[in-house]
Amino acid sequence: LAGCFTLAIMILPVIMRTSEEALLSVPDMYREASFGLGAGKLRTIFKIVLPAAIPGIINGIVLSVGRIIGETAALLYTAGTVAHIPSSLMGSGRTLSVHLYSLWCEGLRTEQAYATAVVLVLFVVLLNCISAQIEKKMKRK
Image (tube, rainbow, N blue to C red):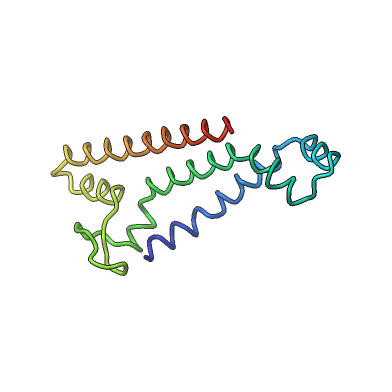
């Protein structure tokens, strides 16, 4: 739980800033056209501005999740380094990035460290592919 809160606090400013930039990148012409057609402020935000900004918001979230996946230093001190699945929400555990760091520092199990790195990379690639599919579906609408 401590690791989740730590990563959420670390990543929240990044998501907020990328979302803000995505919303600001929507041309003012869209807003003006919506207001000119008689739409209110809320309708303009939810029907015009947000759908146009969704790709930028999704990209910010995906980049943030990729950063979370690779984060090791904060998790070493908050989530723990125990090599078993936690039995409760408050239990100590180990993420893949911490597991990779531990294996690499030992120097005895380099093949397992490489395998862990491959799993991490595949997970990030899979996450990017899923987000690209979601973005394509959003653009069709």
